[in-house]
Amino acid sequence: NSVGGVIFLPITWSELYQNHLNVTLKINKENKMNFKKIGIATVLGFVGMSISSVIPLIFFYGPHFEALAGKFPDIVKSPPEPVPALIGGIVWIIVMVIIFEKMGTNNIKDGAITGAWLGASKWFFFNMQMIAMIPPIFTMDYMIIDVPLSAFSYGVGGAAIGWALDRFK
Image (cartoon, rainbow, N blue to C red):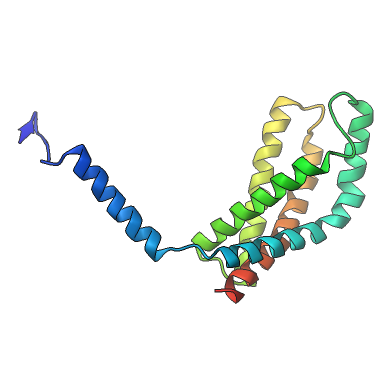
């Protein structure tokens, strides 16, 4: 059957959906997630990223945001509320671990490289958006320092994730 040169296949929506389910189920059976491995990689990635962030936090981020809190006391909170930051960090590390696993990043070197570019690109994008919307708070000077520090921190966390994904296959 064709109309105007377009060929219509004799398949119903139900058949199409069933074929999709069959393919999806087959893929899921072949690509099962190992929750123990993901959990261990998440913990190690979080610890690695946290430890590598201590010095930048003390010497750059802390003083920077304290100065901003003094300048914009109704907008910037220093120190920040830890609970939302921890929840966001944990969720992001879980997402990173799943991304790394799906990409096949499973050694220290590849984890460090993937972590570094992922962190740098994430914070470059975020900072540029903030520079566009609230330039008195987010400046180009801040971004120029933040992106390399983030790349370093994410590289350390990524190396830990890569090692864990290799170790706990």
